[in-house]
Image (cartoon, rainbow, N blue to C red; front, side):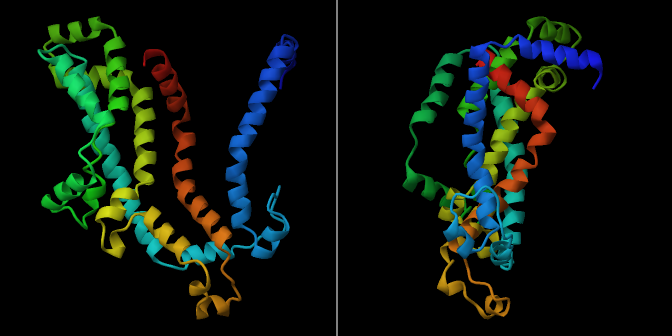
Length: 298
């Protein structure tokens, strides 16, 4: 670090008063409170039951063991669950973003009955048809035991659509007017003008949709019957439910492994959250910008 950079850093620190330091300490403690449960989950997944009983509040795992991960991954169904969940996430995010962006662009334009249709859409945020009609609908569409039963029912988040619509409305109208003078249609305006200018907010909500799709389990529990079509969350749920004496198989006895229920639960948590967390570093700059836009415009 150069001398000038060090001097600037020291001058910025000198400008901080007691209130600033208090806020920084509060935010640091708040961040620690948020992050520790994740760190503790990793620690618990890496220790044996004996070590966990000795120290439930651990700063680091003293004797690292991968027995819990062995129990989780020894069942090949977890890889089928990962493939199903990955497929649901990719198809679902594309499906969600296509419908959300199209609806947001449509409602950012003026047309007769716009307020009425908007009220009807917002109404669905507070009321639904109920579980039984929902199940009968999926059954009539012949989507029972079909992975698309976990994709098609959740098309648009009205909240996400509203924020994207407001973002489209905030863009300069002169851009659209000049494009129409040049003969551009709605699709050209949407894909060549509005979407490139809205990348941060689109990436933000694509990430939100991705997390929701990755954590999909409810529709899978209702409609999926085949074991090879279960999403990752249901597979891990099954592993956790069967943890105990029923899992003490010859294979585990061969490796002298005693199933540790709490460690297996935490290993499932780590396996679930790791893939989706690996995406964050690559889209962090868009994510932060998108949150800022949503906070100001929404």
